[in-house]
Image (cartoon, rainbow, N blue to C red; front, side, top):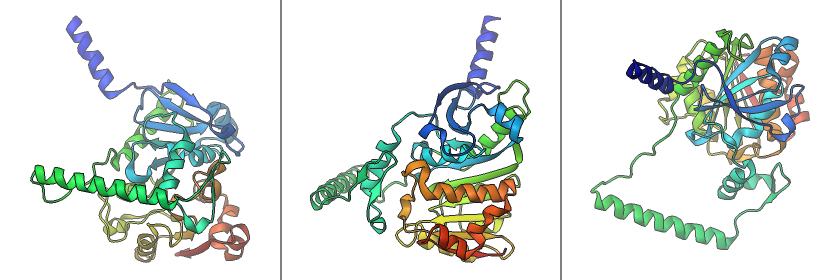
Length: 351
């Protein structure tokens, strides 16, 4: 009997708890600027993901009705969503529940972005000021030289290691995440929404689901965009072009059935060329909007409340998932776009 009990406990531990169990929580930037202050939570029944949602979820749902859902995949396909914390927290404050790949983490958002911005300073911006007011300067000539010397040493060591192990080519990068995780967390949310013992019970509108990804995370979105539950896709600084990544290729564009929004950082964005190819290749029956800023591959995610990228994402989601037609002006009206964001350029088709 004792053995059977222990075996049952091991099985339960391997699959996770059934009901949502919020065990960790934090509030970022006072909960955002939206009407429903947000929070970031870790859940014992879904340890591989982080949930961004309004505080007092039940009260918000009682006033507003069930909330739309977002599943999010990270840049570089990392198993960590801290870099997008400002944007996701801001989006949640406007009445969304976003589940992001990566376990709950209380790492310093600004420390994360300091390293990213130092590594790839967006010269098209002139200057970079983070949400905490800190100004990031481009690398000095001395810093650039030191970095180049370090990279040269790393390449030399890698070549030696490859020679030792008789490998002729460097190994492909090992990603910690995979596209199906977006559907897995959507399945978890679906189960929680139907479970009377869950804190998400009847809080989610699973007929209004968006898939969103940044950079490599955008490839993960394309890989699962065939799923009929995904009603719109938000593609941030990403494009598949002629690449193959995360199981996605240009053929994945043929599986699209929902309106697409590409938010790209202009020619300085390494995803720019691929995004243009995607835009041209998307079928004539799929509505697609592409906005281009001058922010490069890092967007404005390190700015207060996620900066202008967060504003654009919220407008798109409000239009596509909440039916707020007035929010469509940013995407359909060139004069309005010029008024709101003078440096941005926009194109659209199939509307």
